[in-house]
Each structure stands twice: as structure tokens, then as C-alpha cells.
Length: 393
Image 1: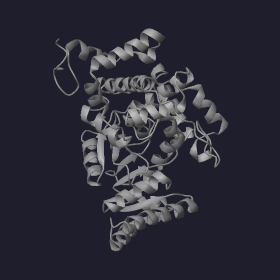
Image 2 (image 1 turned 90 degrees about the vertical axis):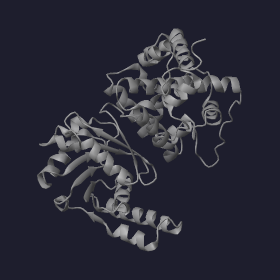
Image 3 (image 1 turned 135 degrees about the vertical axis):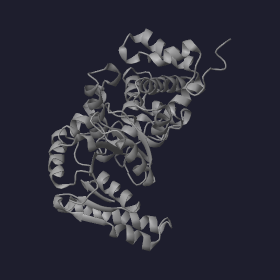
């Protein structure tokens, strides 16, 4: 299979390495000569490291790189069977791109976008044959991250999502099927990890270091929300939050925070700029958390209840299957447990009581419990067992 990839940034180059490693001929397109050369060096460097670690032989690494063709000429895409774009998150740019691609490729060529926040249906609408269009969303860095979200648009022909899912699986990845809703699975369900942490900070209930400590030491998350936002970059993380909020018709559950907006406006993007929520200057002394377990549990339970509620609502609205929701959060953002299984462990009634307590205190719609969670508690059910063993006392 010949695969064309448009955009040679970190994501495009990473996807090119994945599909070339899987045995495909890859055409990596960028009109920026320097960006294309950087991508080639990056892929070569990645393959060399794998060879050094013994994960590939030198011959295998050379064969993979030989399947990669760097090009500035879109005309070389004529015989591609799949074209995937990984360019700037701008709807107009993506639509114009596929108008051009469609004039070159065969009628059977699959067209795909790696967008993380735009509507697949909107991009597909620019195509003469939108039924062959689909979302294939990788996570950065693509060679290392296992999860790939496969998102059919309302126009996508029946069976294409399953065909693409099988293809992605053949690349050694873990594909999940997601409905074409804002944020798909991961960027939708993960919003409270950031938003509720900032809310707790703004209210003065706990400081950044304490919230990060609670989530890592008590919750088992790999990074706390403030360290993670600084790592991702507020230029990326804030924009995704803003995009999801806008796309959900300003649902308060996804409301961005002024604290993060001000960092974004100031250019304090996090690690990449030397300052975000934390300072990354050479002489910076990082704040110490207040290691108060009762406070830490309060922080963890509040953020966790919000995350579980988001996963429950995604399930209720058929955004994804139960298993795909769990896979997405454990493999896409490395959560220590699937959120629905975590809900079962805590007890859905406990989660609901936390949410209802927050709603009672604030009377804000951001704390409204998912109707599915409420129905399950009423029926004594859990997500992965029909009856909750302890709910019939």
C-alpha cells in the first residue's frame, strides 16, 4: 500500500515512521524544504536509536528509511491508496488541501485527517466524494504512543471505519472507534483533569504543587495536571480547551479558565518558554507540596469524579464503546486505570454523591451528574457487572 502524508512536522514525521516501519511505501510531503529535511533527519535518528537499542537491525532500519520518500511535489501522490494530512489545525487550510488532493488521486483512495479538534464532517464536506473521508488521530509522539482514534464522519461510507481500524491495527497500534464529536474520546474526557485542577487552585483549596502531588502520589497518575499542562504547552492545551468549549455550544463543563488564558496571553507556555504554572529557569526552586493526605484525597476524589462523569456521559451518548473508552484513557493519556473500572472500584454511588455534593454547593451546571450514572446507582448497577454486589443492603 502506498501512503501519502502531508505535513512534515513532529506528528507527520512520526506517522511516516510508523507506516514505513509497517512495510508501506510512504510519500512525505511538505512545501518547506528545511522542514522536510528536518523530518528526514528526525526519522533517520529515531530509527538509528532503535537499532542501537537492538529493537531493529541496521539492515531493517535502512530498509524502513528506503521506503520513505520526501517530496515537495503533490503530483507524486497520484498512486497513493491513502492520504493522511497532519498540517496546521485550520479548517480552511485542510479543506483547500483535500480539494487539491482529490484532483490527483484515484476514486478509491482513502482520505484522512489527523485533526485533534476539528469536525471530520466539516473537512469531508470540501470533498467531491466525502464518503471516502475519515479521521485517523494519532497521539504525539506517534512512534511511541499506541492509541489511534478512528473517527468516521456522518458522510463516511459504511464499513470504512472498520477497514481503517484493521489497517491501523496492522501498523502495531491500538485503534479505537469514536463518534465525530468535539475532542473525540481523549480530548473530551480528559478536560476535567486540567479544568477542575485549575478551579481548585483558583478557589485556594490547594496550591499547584499539592494538587500535582495528590494526583501522582495518591492517584497514580504519571504527571500532575499543572506539570502536564506546562509539558504540553499552554499554546496547545488552552487552545484545545477553548475549541472543545466552543464546539460544545459553550457547555459549562468545558469552560476554560482565566488563569490559563492569562499564561497563554503572556506567552508563558510552560517548559518550551521557560515559564508556565511553574518556572523552568535554571535557578528556579520548585514549590513543595503540603503532604496532607486528607486534603490530597479531597482533591483527588473531586477531579476523579469529574473525569468519571465525563467518561460516563461519553458512554451514554455513544461516543465510543465501554472497552474503547477504557483503552483510550489508559493508552492515549496513560491513566493508571480505565475511568469506568475506577468508578466500579470506588462505587458509582460514591462518585454520584461527590458530584451531587459539588452541585449542591456551587449550583453550576459543570457539576451535573450524567443521567447514566444516576440511573445505574438507582438500579444498583456498575459499569462492568450487571449488579453491584454491595448495593442491596
